[in-house]
Length: 70
Image (cartoon, rainbow, N blue to C red; front, side):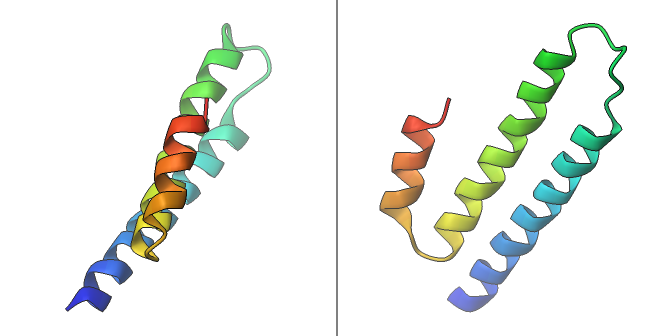
């Protein structure tokens, strides 16, 4: 049962990482406040990485990453 939960969390985090990568690549340089848009997209990437770390059982590492990541 726990393997299914871990697999689902890894699939969700992979999906979020793909969405954030497409979002970063689709931003145009002429957009106003592009820096803030990139920060927002990388926030999605950070949460996906934390979900992946929780899925593989690295709870302490996920907590440290959540606290130390900007």
